[in-house]
Image 1 (cartoon, rainbow, N blue to C red):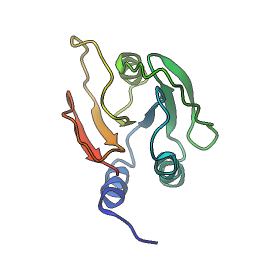
Image 2: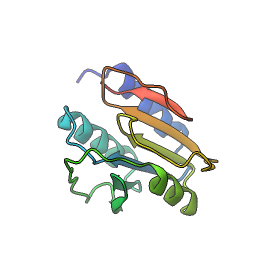
Image 3: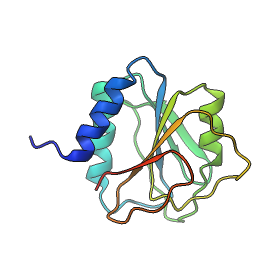
Image 4: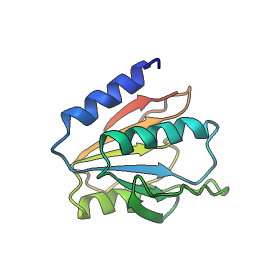
Length: 138
């Protein structure tokens, strides 16, 4: 098995945060071009951090369940907002949020995010992120 740079980076981040509460969010507003890539990311979290909650959201949260039992359902409308997920993470006292998205969604600019956010971008194009750190996973 060949481990690529983004996988190595993600492994390191998860190991460094072994004592942190983490969540993995997936933007489900569109079916991704590389669904197997998304599944592999979810499996990596399931293997290394089975306590991870998986949040599926488009313009609202659709499901929150343990990473190992979730069935991902995508929609075709393309409307995406990060606000509800970011507020949920704050309310749940999540230390680190990983968000699989193309970073084309919206959020309230007044929103205060006082925890770590890593944007996992499954695209060749790397957009500018509003805060946090982007990681290209393509």
